[in-house]
Amino acid sequence: MSEVSLKNAKAGFSSFVDQAAAGEFVTITRHGKPAAVLVSVGAAELAQKALGKDRRSLIQYLRNFPADVDLSDDVFARNPAPSREADL
Figure 1 (spheres, helix red, strand yellow):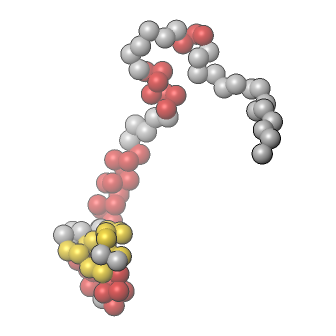
Figure 2 (cartoon, one colour):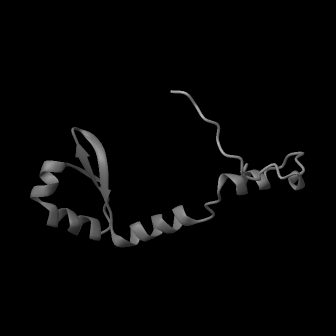
């Protein structure tokens, strides 16, 4: 994995794209801290698939959580009441 500053990445962008297309990860830094990574299309697609897999909501997670909760009690139902007024 190579590391390059944003200034140098702008100057030699095409060579860094070539490196990423060849399978190398190119880390782009801003003020000395990692800000982004340039990767191949294949690596990006794999990452997208991994992130999209089994992304459940908090409610779905809690419904599957092993606990002694009776789900028929509408514990997870949304409260339809309007919020209260607050004096600011």
